[in-house]
Image (cartoon, rainbow, N blue to C red; front, side, top):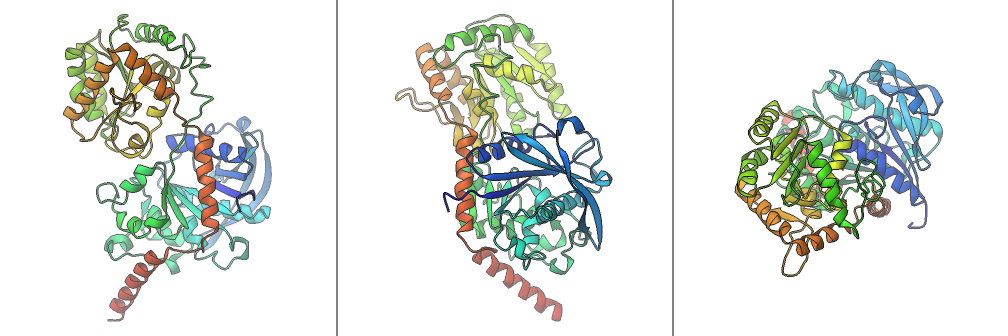
Length: 510
């Protein structure tokens, strides 16, 4: 099996460079190319949104009037083929009624839109006579696919040997709708879904919940997050299902695009550099200070945070320690991001009070983000929870040392620096409190003021391998493992679901 090229149908409703609202698009734009580079036939499918410029596609219409079941009817679409890059094809589901919109989400018919897209992807594979070994689904928008392959497509010989992998990028977004969704998806007669520890599961249609039950395997975007979602604290109400299928839940760390994020060739930096020439970062620091309206202060520790300004990203902690850092540590602070109005105003007010030490940019600016990574000394990631996180990986590649909360992918990538041994690549804190966060910042600043130790720490962090190739190899190993196992719901979970089915039937009969 290991030497046989696999056929992977990769489903994501947002893919860089065509459509993006968050990290899902970055993963979908990079991971398939890394998998393809290892010799596998991977093909990506996404909707053709109205805002996608057709000249971006450089493709052709390969299927016309493809009939796709939706409820009791059929709705037709065209399939366009484009190129993601590195030889990986990307297909676009063209249905103007559902996708000719100015955005991706937040429409009243989102359930119908994404169910249609997912069904069209499967019907497309059949029409092209391209049988996937794996259908790799991402987040709730594709949650019906594992359900379909074990119900309405169960006896279809075309998918007889196909397995489904469902990747959770953020368990908090589950795709919860009313029961009419089951009719739209064509599974109303398979609709009963319950769990002995989740009696309310049948009161709604939870698309992610269905995927967690029916997928052949489930994975998250970091090993630590895979463990955390099995707990009531991080399970978002679905942890009983995840615990029941623990043997088929995996964590694979996301990677970063090391060609895009490369301080040795970054066009946005004033001076490029590598791990052997870290002294050149000082020029970038001075340029960043000038650009941000901060005075040139070569010896002041320059702290930075690039994030959505919301509590999930630790904006509440930063708000409580920012004044401490500039008053008592003589630090400077640069913030880049948008978010909740409360935090935006709070940080803007801090910048007015400390104009020589705090700079706040309520926007997203790609060039400025690169310059912050290349010029800041200490990069802050105090997220309350973080399925993976990319900022800490990028910061380390640029020699900006991270301070991170021990959660999710942050715990997998940032390891506490030990000055006695030189081990570690950053600074972490366990308790989610401003005191714990500030203590970690103090430790980082104290180390910064020891130039030899700091240079060693920077060099160590820059050597970490966060390439997509490493992640791709782990996904391929997981695909192969799935193909060696029988299809179907894991036995332990299946047994518990059947128990609830029996209880429900007995209740109905009385």
